Length: 256
Ligand SMILES: *[C@@H]1O[C@H](CO)[C@@H](O)[C@H](O)[C@H]1NC(C)=O
Image 1 (cartoon, rainbow, N blue to C red):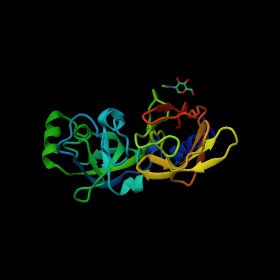
Image 2 (cartoon, rainbow, N blue to C red; image 1 turned 90 degrees about the vertical axis):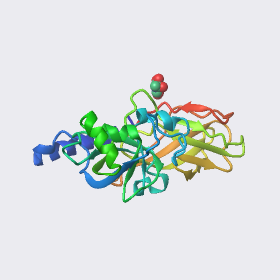
Image 3 (cartoon, helix red, strand yellow; image 1 turned 180 degrees about the vertical axis):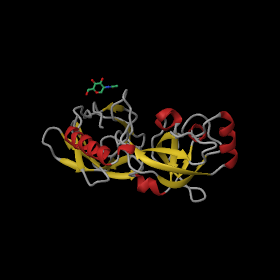
């Protein structure tokens, strides 16, 4: 909704692009980049609750466990929550679609860009035999590109971190980041007099402030695109003045 003008522009440019390059018309995503990917040997079918993005319990179930740790793409935490299509490149073993993963952690192996959950790594294979083959290789050549994250059944949600200490210290993590843009700044504003405070990115998707504004609060998130496009998204739902640790607030917004 908040992105409608951007969206229209996007469609227009996609149409122009499809005229110039009909072979590539089905997609609005960028070109693939070559790299390497490994997997966490001890991972099961879930993601991780302890990843460096700070997602906690959400990190285990996000995207059905199709998750990855990023090295450079972690980008000091800004890369948390970003989605990538990753496909391995050996045509004997690998499917064309590969897998869509969400970044939930930071990590690197031998010149890899992704260390994936085992579930995600297996998903790149085109058959059960190929899965075995990929897993036995451990690290494979891949290509990847940023894609949009979609959580049709969920709005962007914030969870007040257990380290919070009402009313002196507020920390929260952002869940269900959507679309293809990064969240590059977060503000909290007093709904009464619109005084806003810029929060610190503590790590990953965790934002904190030592002296939170008082009263009921409204959240503002700055979404930035690779093209330099920036947009403040202001959810309709407020954070009540008596927020407490462990609480989960549905912001009421989705972003494309
Ligand atoms: C998302 O927010 C809207 C209000 O903006 C609400 O009607 C809807 O139920 C929310 N969706 C979910 C899945 O919570």
